[in-house]
Length: 502
Image 1 (cartoon, rainbow, N blue to C red):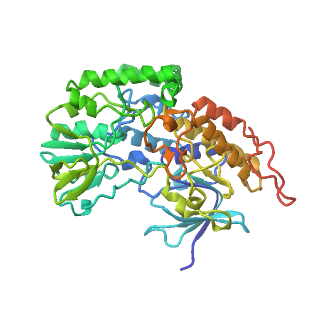
Image 2 (image 1 turned 45 degrees about the vertical axis):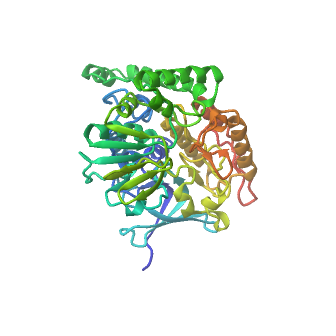
């Protein structure tokens, strides 16, 4: 079969926050020659894939959206997963992406053609029909929470009842009145457990590592609130500005400022003590590492659920499965009817990296074999005209990741606008220098020194590869200083990129 080839200026892979954010930035910069490729049947990314009971965001809703698309209709301080998915669908409609949005279009392989100076994307899936897209530039907006981690546990594959990951919730599973095990006590589990405790016969919660949890709080927005936000844009802007400032101030406690961390830890300890009266259970739920080392969770319902008769906490990892019996590492045995794996994602080893081939055929996974690296958390040496959003050192531990996406997308649109016909090749030395810069900034943070194992640090190199070790303001300023010198000076055939700042 002869491949059908479509030529575009920019191919964006992914239609979650990052992909839509990139489309918005291109449109605002005057680019209209792009496509957004989405493997699923709808937009939404992680908020489409995760539909577990109780799913909601732990970032205030009015900060968890695009500045260009404020939403006066959020139901409360923290939006539900369904609301966020609906919001993203609304953004796609408002941007009138039309045929530029191609659903059910997974990327099977992407390779840089140095002779023709294009990215060649081979589409996969039953509807692909040998379709190929050639693009001058490629934007990977594939997300970092897309590949669920399934633990390798002996006998798990032979468990007779339902077994599924929290990100692939099986709504056909009859969990009401059943004995349900939840494996993991991370961000998803603290939302799932209270919901299951209301309907299951019993919940067995296997905890490998306790989490620091602070009060969630938050209120519902009244009809009057929403009307005011809709009719008075200044009120919405002021609220967003306040939430932004609160987030930036929170960086100190998350990164390791001794005074701020001690104050935040005291809040977490008081929250635990007020909601868990039993000393033994409280001790089992108390982390043995520094506050901020792992993701800090927000919940007002998790501790009361665990303290109730509806839940049994097993402070031990799942070691093996024998029929319908779960065996914990502490030797305890638990008979259950269903297993929910709230075991996280392959965040530091992005699955799309194996599909992307740069100069010399080197894959992004090979380039990142010692952990993700980049310049500006966005561009990568050896991968011309490639931009990665929400990838290396682009996440936050203290505020909204959408803010980082907006900055990255703005940077990508800026350098694409300045490149003319030239190829953007990142100077390997610029990437090394940025990686060293990240290392120096991260060295004293709790993520590196807090005595825990977290998903922010790549276990192959011991480097902080997922989080930006600074504030959003600092990231914005860092990208603003990028003046084009991050790209290789060109030969006579390809003059140096100059004036890449807006």
